[in-house]
Image (cartoon, rainbow, N blue to C red; front, side):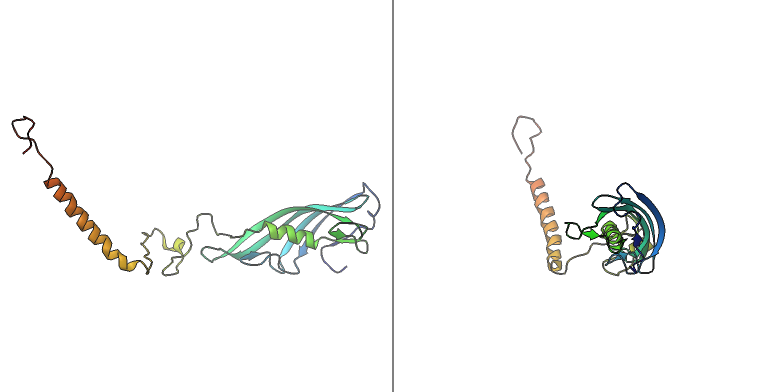
Length: 196
């Protein structure tokens, strides 16, 4: 096997209870992940793997850590964040068994198991920081670089024509309230219950 993730298990084959541990640094042959963030091709992936012989095959479990790089999904600057995952999978001896992975030529190839675990651990919408304000919708500038900015009201052009009615409504409301004040009944100064 030519995969850098392949581990030899000849000494464990058909020996239930036998166990081996390996620590290795692997250069990622193909990017793990797609979209805005991934563990890039050529990055170093640190693996701590435990191999355990069972009756059905070899149980491969361990921990993987690497650095994922990409861009913030809100403001588009370059970001880098650590990815750490645990994984476990049984590699069966018998290909007729209903398993997903098998021992080939006395080796187990951990790459698909590690790849699946890493890709599932990557954030769907990575951000440079949890409160990243993103980009200005008008200018496209990064809001975090602008400091304190008074948010401006963005008016949908389809509704812009109606903005003139808002001022007219306010004027008519003021006029109505002043008319109502003028028509409020007042009591006569004698206090006899009659209205003026």
